Structure formats: C-alpha cells, structure tokens
Image 1 (cartoon, rainbow, N blue to C red):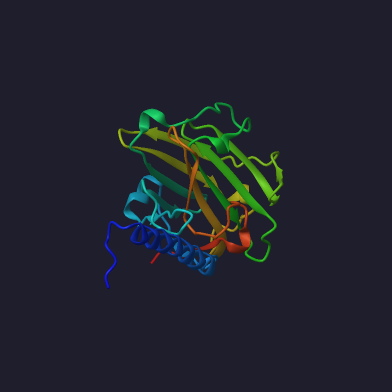
Image 2: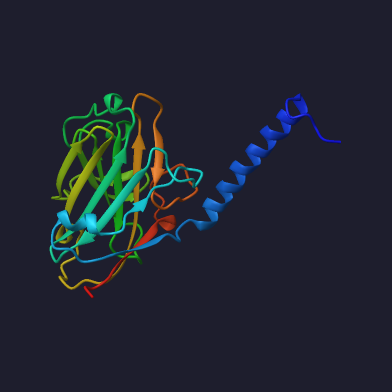
Amino acid sequence: KAVPPDSVYARRIKVINDEFQKGAKRLTSMAAAGKSTFKVRPVETIADLDKETPMRFYDKLADLSEPPTWLYAGYNRRDLFFKFLCYEPNMDKIQADVTENDEGRIWDDDCVELFICPDPNNLDKAYHILINAGGAVMDGLQTSAATIDKTWQSQAKINVVKEANRWIVNMALPFASIGVNDVNFTGDMVVNFYRTRVAGGQPTPFVWSPTGEAAYFVPGKFGRMTFVKAE
C-alpha cells in the first residue's frame, strides 16, 4: 500500500533518505580525496587566462558550489598565474574586516586561499596564501596544521576586482618564491584551492579538490597540478 505523501511516515522516510544521501556523498568525497588533477599550460600574461579552461569548486559534500567559484591557472617562465571568480548574489554583504597584510583573522573574511607543495615527495612543506575580498594578504610556509612560518613572503602581485555579482582575485606568483628556479620546469605539484564565503552569514567552505575533512591543511588529500609544455 502506498504511503500518503503528506503523512508523518512519508516525511520521516524523506528525512532518513536525505541524511543517507548526505552520508553517501561524504563517503564518495573521502574516497576521491587526493585524486583531483588538472593541467596548467603556458600563457604569456595573466590576461591570457580567460582562454584556458576553468575549474569549478565544490562544497564540503562534493556538490558543485553555489554560488559558483571558478579557478583559472597558467604560467610563464617567471610566474604562476591564478584567477579566482567568486560569484556572489550579496555583494553588499561581503566581509573584509582585515585590512593589513599578515594581521588578524583573515580566514574569517570572504577570502580565497591556496596551498602549494612544489615537491610531491615532501608534503610537510606547503606554501600557503590567503587573500580576502578587500585585497589583504596573509602568506606563510606551512609545515603542520598548527605551524606556519610567516616570515616567508610570497612576493605575489595580487589584484582584487569587485563587480555587480562577483569578486575576482588575480595573482601572479613568482616561481622563485616557492623554490623553483628551473625556467623549464615540468612535472607535478601537490595543491589545493579554497574559498570561504561569508557574505553576511556563517562561513561556508568551497574547495577545488574535496578532501572529506573539515581542516584545510591535509596535503595528503590534496590534488595535483601538472605543468605541460607549449604545444
């Protein structure tokens, strides 16, 4: 006999099913942790990133993030280029309380961040950069979840642009600042990219490569960025 759709029993079944689906997605996310990859290609300048294929971020349950967050990447012989597109329907509510570099709780603002381990065989050395929606920067060399050396300076050139329905972070990160001095470098780096969305509400994390973890610094579950030569 069919259960009436408006009955208490039907509503209980729906609640249980919804929780099961959330649990299944979390298990899928955990199983996929560390398997995300993308290829980064040569470009002349950061302005050329729009010609590349962007990557979309996910939420903590491995669903595509809403509002969307997209990442473009490229490189030349001097710099790594990144462009974050952070779509936001509540632009008047974005939070950027931190205004000085390397000061304050920037991670509580609307912000993006990246972790880069240039040596895939040494995941205890991750260069970590956060940029909030106001353009303030915090950077450091992270060696554990609780240990970051803030004396490291990324020397990155960063520009933040606010538009009607999104804010954009453009970044040019010198290879030399992350210990890569080979202008013909190819190979892999272990990386991950995050967005924290506040916009007047509770902080919500979005991520390029879901790790299945609440903590952000879990390099063993990050994805990989592969450098390819010009065709």
